[in-house]
Length: 80
Image: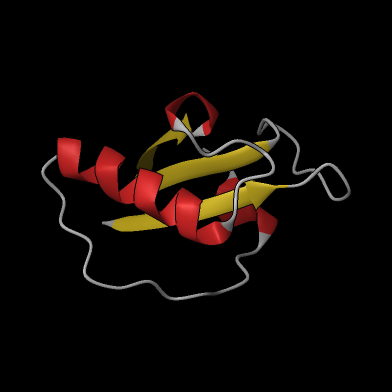
């Protein structure tokens, strides 16, 4: 299972995603995504705030987050 925390800025928008922070989960050909704005990580939220919100969302799904890695995914990886 791969989880990505993605910020879609107003300057460089990614088609198909709303502005702000989105949590994307991918596994074996399927995926789900959820916008984090309504959970407290809006478009102008700092990275640490978005990470905290993502940890809370994943914990609700029974997923424990132990660390973060910063990468620049290609835009194909962001299609869900």
